[in-house]
Image 1 (cartoon, rainbow, N blue to C red):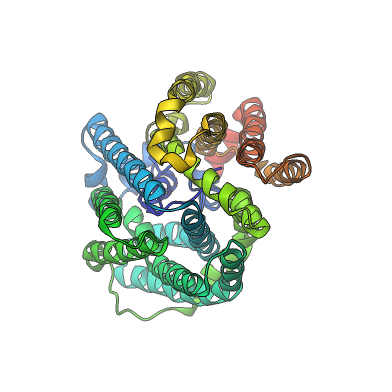
Image 2 (image 1 turned 90 degrees about the vertical axis):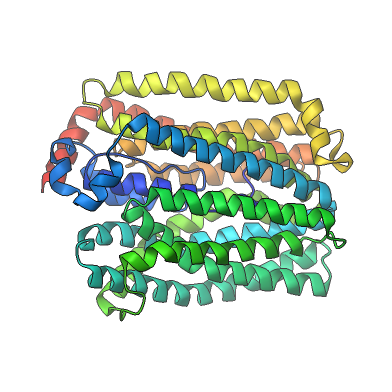
Length: 494
């Protein structure tokens, strides 16, 4: 089960995935990916009628300013992007190891709770708004004034939603921290920082969507890499700082988000007028999207963070810290997930109906062995990797292998989801809800969550529904691909 970390909360890659879905709407597929699937389902739902048959209309649909940004040598673009993503993930791993080593288990559990809550608030507060920007903004790109009103209307509404979400999640954060032994001062500090970070994310994610809309790949990459280096600087500062408290990395992350927003605004000001008035019509559109997708995103929060909330409620501080620390090494799968969305997703989406099966399974035959190789490497090197986390996590070699297996299962699910969404095979997404509820119930009933091994096995159990659901969607999609592609082509032309 992936646990949000202060060094990996940057949503740059997330915008690349949204860029992928948007680009499918406008011309033919290009990419975004999503192990942090904040709006993967909403975006796919918006574009499912436009996946097939757009290639011939590329030059007519893309504005010249955007077309210039996507021309050039594809492999050079991809290599630059993947090089940047690999650098970000490498820095994230280094920063994560430093943080794990410097914090006690108790402080690391507080840290894990804080960023789980930030992630939850971001997911819930972003429900449907990214979809509104990308789907409606694509039609308003040529009208700067209306595009400005759309963006600012959504930011205004997001801030109102943030206040409501905080009123619910804020007390929950206080309870979780206190249940795990945090002092009143520590709890107050962390809750304040969580609220501050979450408030900043209301603008950060919207600006990311706007930059993705305009295909500002270079700016997104610069913001992501800069954020990674700033977090690294914060981790080095933690080494020298005498107070080894969870509040230090949480505060650093808040500062990084605010600095990233300033960097975003350098490009945003060229795209929109930040003083434009809001528009009630756009707020109503965004609110409809929010209401429609809120149940889905509530489930995303439940599925992705259930282990943290459950251990937090039980007050299993040590187990919570161990699960969070062992999850550090699962960042290796992030590069595969982003690669699939950046490279494989467009290929599958462009494939003809006759060749889609060969293309789909050809990509799987490359991705799945690579995932197994990573699992084998970690299994073999676990006695050497574990000391990197510090002596307080010694003796957890078996748990590390199980936790990495959970990360591998999540990655397989992400690969399948990316390929399925590239073809618009999302009709059975609802199956994941009952399957996941069944998995959570079974895990809670049968596993001993007071031990690190029990919690790690629970992560494997809860991770399994995603690839299971995607395999079902793949089977149905392959069987009905002729009819589905014809329908999508007709809807796209309409």
